[in-house]
Image (tube, rainbow over all chains, first blue to last red; front, side, top):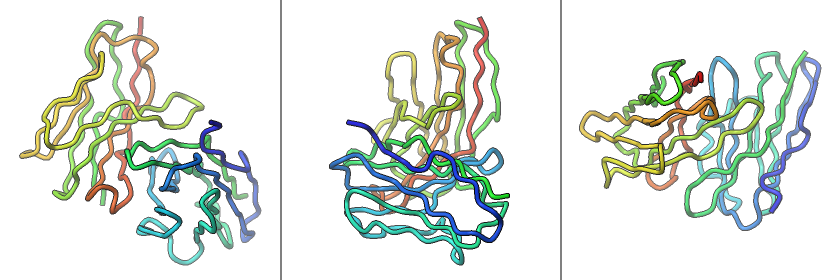
Amino acid sequence: NAGVIQTPRHKVTGKGQEATLWCEPISGHSAVFWYRQTIVQGLEFLTYFRNQAPIDDSGMPKERFSAQMPNQSHSTLKIQSTQPQDSAVYLCASSSFQNTLYFGAGTRLSVL
Amino acid sequence: QQQVRQSPQSLTVWEGETAILNCSYEDSTFDYFPWYHQFPGESPALLIAIRPVSNKKEDGRFTIFFNKREKKFSLHIADSQPGDSATYFCAASANNYAQGLTFGLGTRVSVFP
């Protein structure tokens, strides 16, 4: 079991460009979560899917952020028109019915 | 609005002492309270968790104390070891994950030999 796989590990974008982050959950896990981690804000919940359906996106900035889970083996987080304040480590986690979140290594996004 | 408040922001203890980390919450629908730890350069990982049916949960040197009336819970690390040095996050969720897990801002624990 390779755990939760996130790609890329690092991404550098220019202001205004688009960034797409990928997550492959642990096989058999029914829930996928996206979090953003910064020094100031800590671990911020963004959105989560269960059985590929969006359940709670209350943490997603509405205008430029979107997330999808087209199949049970991957989820994407897309940020349009990236801004410097989007710079953070984006963490994907998956969970089975037991509720424990297993986090991936994260994608460090740097917006110049 | 921070739904889960955590204190202190940082904590230094000597090896062998008990480290105490505190959290409080506001949402009375929260029914699952885990603690995660994160070592430098790594991702958060579950340490221990409790549900409100209990007011105490132990796992080795780690104990959660839960006070439903006051909406507070704490993590006690007994006999602290230098290897326990990490950032610890408390968290809460409601209705069996009808909502995402909400984390506190973390406590950076440093254990000196």
